[in-house]
Image 1 (spheres, rainbow, N blue to C red):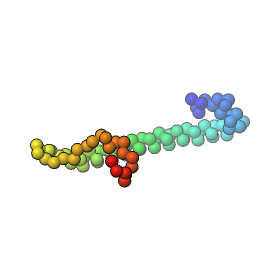
Image 2: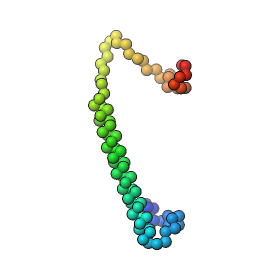
Image 3: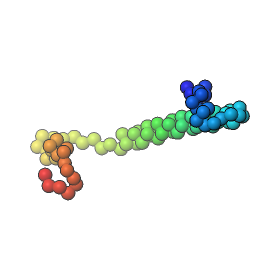
Image 4: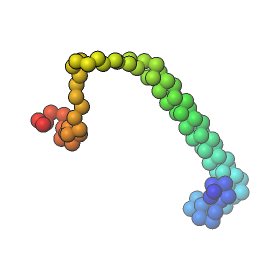
Length: 86
């Protein structure tokens, strides 16, 4: 809210005395907010596109009784490093 309605703190911090400079500063802040919004929207679109691609390329596996599978063990979550012995 302080960017739309400049407070005394912002005026004192930036030393804005001229009204034209203040208007220019506010327009720059609004442009920055608009660029931030556009970037966030593009990021969401890109993330959704990546998720859709990933979901399309998942290979579903069907396991039968007697198949050999790799067992995931939670005790390895506290693994100290890549080359440390368990």
